[in-house]
Length: 213
Image (tube, rainbow, N blue to C red; front, top):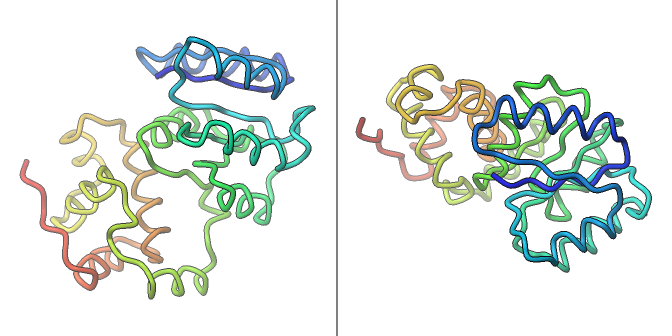
């Protein structure tokens, strides 16, 4: 995975580079210090799989920088990183098309797993900032299993068959924490709180057959 980080805090950038090098085999992170530098890098000859943007970085102008970046590079997965997190900011970031909101205070293992989830096509939101039960219920009434990514549908199938996170991780050759993040995303998208409700939702929306091992 080739990651571009736009952040004006050198210490955070260096720490993240080391985290990627140490815990994400085959991945590489480059960093720039401004939004304009990020756009220049993205418009160059190199291809990036993920862009991480500091929401408070000079040049971002709040969420205007995210909108400008989404308009210019519409297919590129973008994750917002921030030292300050609040539910309203998280909701607005996701509504504008970001694939994730990553607090800078996240534990290293959770951060690397979240990056892999986003790069694989998923969405990461800290659990404490996910939709409220009322919002989730409304989404469930309108939703279908089609909201899930192919990987999430695969994992949901394993949940239906009663497998644990550890068993799923072994079957799919993933880290257990990566499976946990996928499961959280499944719960959020289906508007459920636990595995039992997820399995019931699968049956209600058309039943996901357990995948073959």
